[in-house]
Image 1: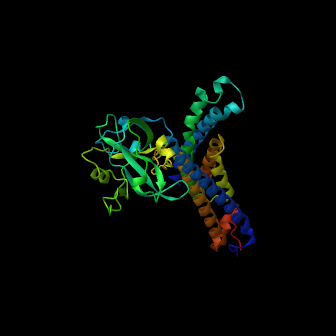
Image 2 (image 1 turned 90 degrees about the vertical axis):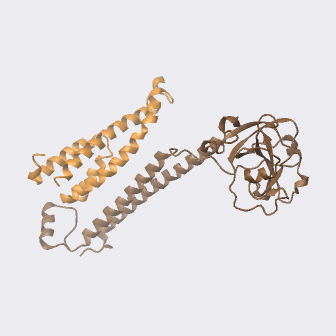
Image 3 (image 1 turned 180 degrees about the vertical axis):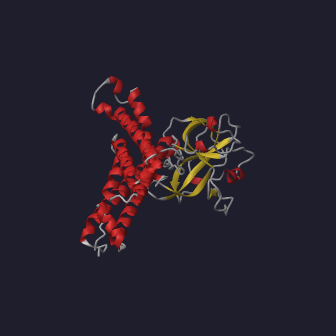
Length: 265
Length: 119
C-alpha cells in the first residue's frame, strides 16, 4: 500500500514543489514588472513637455482625464485677493504643513483664474505672514490637478485657511471672479517665495497609467499562475491515483500497459 | 476521446505554428547578438518589427494553456503514463517538436483505438 509519504512518491513531491515554485515565482516576477512599468509611466507623464493650460482645458470645462498631472504653463497675473492656505499638507520630510495658494489669471488680469499652489509652508505659519504673490505678469509651470472633493467642511470661513483645495470654496472668498475647475501645483517656487522660505509642494495626484501599459506583463503573470495551479492539480491527481487501492482487474490492466502509475501494493 | 482527439490535433497545429513564428520573431529581435549587420541592429526596421511582434508569445502562452489541459485530458482518457504526458507538454515548448509528437500521438491513438482510424 502506497501512502502519500512513501519514499516512492518523494520524487513526485519534489518535482511538484520545483515546478510550482518556479511557475509561481515567474508569475510574481512578471507581476512586479507590471507594477514597475505602470509606476514609471506615471512619473514619465509628469515629466512631459509643458503645454499652455488653455490647450488642456477651458475655464468652464470639466476636468479631462488625460490632464491629470500634466505639466502646463500659465501666463498671467496673480489676483490680489483670494490667497489662502490649505490645511494638512505633508512636506517633503513628512512635516505637517500647509499649501500656499493664490489664483492666477489665465492671460489678462480680468480673465478666469486658476488656483496655483505656490508652495508649502510649515503648519504654524499665520496667513498674514505669508509672502505676497509677485505683481505683474508671471509665467508659472506646474502640474494640473482636478479640484479636490469636500470631505471636511470649512469650519471658519473667515480665517482664509481651507481644509481642501476645492474651487467652489475658493470662489466664495473672491469678489466676482471666475475660476477654472482645476488647480496647478507649481513645479518650482517663485523666486520671491523661495526667498521667504516657501518650498515647492509635492504632487498629490499622479496621472493614471494607460490601461495597456504593461498589459503583457500582467497577462504573462496570469499565465504563470495558471501553470502553477495546473502543476498542483497534476501532482494531486498523481498522488491520489498512486495511493488509491485499485480494483484488481484494473491493476492488472495497468501492469500490462506498463504505465508509470504504481498500482501494486 | 472522439472529440478530444480532433481538438488536440487543432491545438497542436496552432501551438506549433505560433511557436515557429515566435522563434522567428525572437531571431529578429535578438539576432543582432549573433550576427552584427546594419539591417539587423537595435532600432532597425527588422529588429523593431521583432520587438513589436513579441506579443505572439503571449498568445502562444494562452493557447498553450488550452493545449496543456486538452493534452492532459487526452492522456488521461488514453490511460497514458506521466512521462508520456510530459512529452506532450514539452512538445509545445520546443520549436518543431510538436509536429512529430502530434504525428506519433495520432498513430498511437489509432492503433489503440481503432474507432479513431478514419478521423
